[in-house]
Length: 566
Image (cartoon, one colour):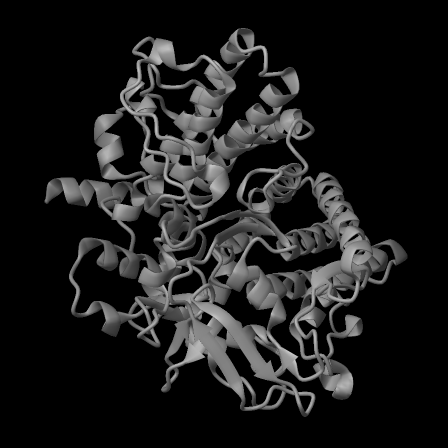
């Protein structure tokens, strides 16, 4: 649409601060490479919008066994959006739910499509816009488009798919859905096509994590191949990211080995959680407090001028111990007693303090992203009562989409599932070798989170022999570690959906999430959850009204009929 050109390109960092394009005439606009860069940055800006960021978390987290709605916090606020989020946490989702609306992601897609349509024409006009620069811009635009579709198909399964921009009325953009598998194959094909065109790094350090790099594309491909069930390709892309991180680690060692906070754990470079013998919290502070960290692969950066629209509103705030959402009580209950609880199995796991805040009476607020700094004492080799947390005042947390430990745990899952495909005995040498490789990845992530003197009590170690007896125990190990490491980052529900689709049923998924429901609703949710389609959102009623080529998710058709009757 020509209206697309009237962009107000908001900025979170210097690399996004370009002049807005106001009231320009389409045919007079696309003349040099700065025009391409401006619209490309507007696609990033659209992805940072409140509508997109809120949905990233809602679609990927709210229905999981991590989060419940804070009924008391919502009781005095009757706004529809808050009530809609509360209903999602209860798995009571109707097609009229505000967050069933997906058009904000199509805004990202259309901006990316527009860049891909006009950029080659600009290259013919601007002699400074070389082939390499064109390809780098195209790689970013393709990756942004693919990322938007990646969120859409994981949330809705089948969605309308187009690679054409909406710039005139010559195309029919009222199209039906394309099946999940076809869209996924197309996304993989496009990313494989452009992965070597992308920049390895940018001049601005912030842009290295705030814009799409080659590592970000490999992370996306690893994620997609894991869902597709092509485990060898998933592993290949994960290993590419690890090789890249090892190169970066070696550069850091040569540059400032004494002050470097990255260390090798099981051969994998990770930010040290405990840089001194008496204090911990460093990894959180670098990854979530400061942002733009060694481990970050792609994040949406925010600052004082552009607030993160999700964290302050839905997680804890500077003045409250519990926000509009809170953690499932099992995440906090029992921590610090014996070896911890059934989520954070070691009572020296720093991620407990970095994820939740005990408000008393099994009321646990969410503080990941909210905290700017975490620091706790390790004087006895364990976490003591001295805990210092600093909530944010003016700085805004970046929203992380991919980071290195996420990729490591993708690789671990792929190795376990590759072992499962062998159809061999669990004791076979080949299967045990894959199990050991997967365990080493999980153990590295786990070790980083534990106190420096973590081996003072051997009972706190993960032990390979506790998990290598079957595929399911290894798979649970990986998924449980993903839960601990990536909690409240918009990952857990997608992990459970991937597991259910792989198994072809929802039994194990429901076993994991049923504890969040009370006795009055658990049976109804169980019945609904027998259908795999119930794992996905309904198409918004407004979209169905506008586009008669869309077909509603069959699980929600009865709800649609009832609403029309009313």
